[in-house]
Image 1: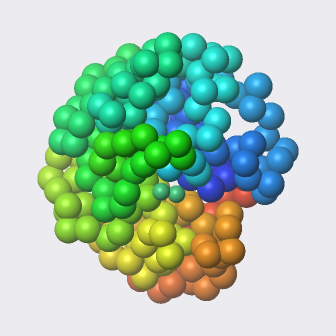
Image 2 (image 1 turned 90 degrees about the vertical axis):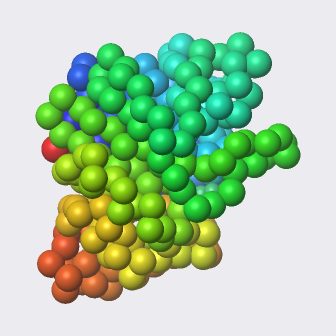
Length: 225
Ligand code: NI
Ligand code: MN
């Protein structure tokens, strides 16, 4: 499994020969100016919730690629009505796609579209690939529901928001990594706006002091699991 950081909460995942894009917000992020949207490949677009900083580039990517939009039922039907391919899910449910199994899990946040449409309830994704398993938390507070995840899935990587203000901060993310029983953490949802700027060295040191590994990838960089 290969994971590419496209800035903010945008990720590319290559697994099982398929390309997945998560929460594309690229053209609205000056820090991601080097990423060319038209070259992004996608068989699937996974959306954690409907906020603009997670869905801005969905339609452009879906038009380019014909990707299937996977999200909660309300977000999936919002895009289905516009003529896009979609797969509706809801909390606690999982589905075996051709690249692996996806489960939509709880997040504590909100989820309205930029135009005010109802975006259902926000979530995160547990992805079980052929060899590796990851949890993408989405925008969320620290929640005890995270303790349910390792009851079913042994994680190889957890992707957690760390920017504070709209989501967990670094300290809560450290506790979240305890809850999901995974010490390998990719941080996201930080630095994009003034409200969520963080001190990188301090964040990495705080995880290190608890025996955990926090990765903060330069935009465009990838890790291989
Ligand atoms: Ni949000
Ligand atoms: Mn957000």
